[in-house]
Image 1 (spheres, one colour):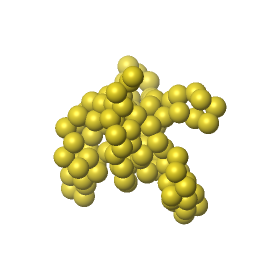
Image 2 (image 1 turned 45 degrees about the vertical axis):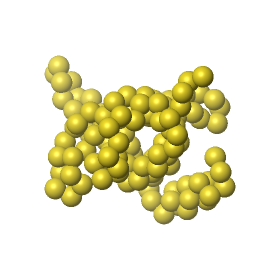
Image 3 (image 1 turned 120 degrees about the vertical axis):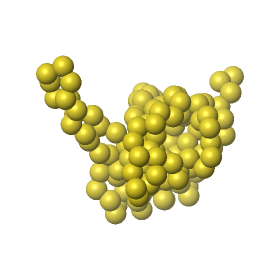
Image 4 (image 1 turned 90 degrees about the vertical axis):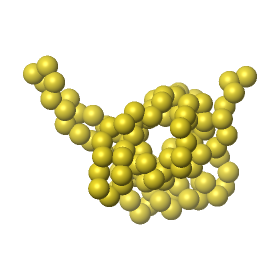
Length: 116
């Protein structure tokens, strides 16, 4: 990560609770999840992010339409996502499930990874 992104991350995380600043690769297509009046349509996408320990996590993210900047397919593109972690209680098969996800405030696209 370059110094400017690191400074931005530290500044953002000092201000907001449950804040997150991740850099990774988009590993799924955009799935339409909901429509809101404030942000327009929201899409679910999965981001593979590497920890400092080199372990990779796949993080579900909800991205407002305004952040996608007319990108149709983001699979394989590097992205930096800034937002807050949120949760939603889902009831299925007679059980409650707590779904955790990153609600994205800002999406910064990088280059498409070619995998080679």
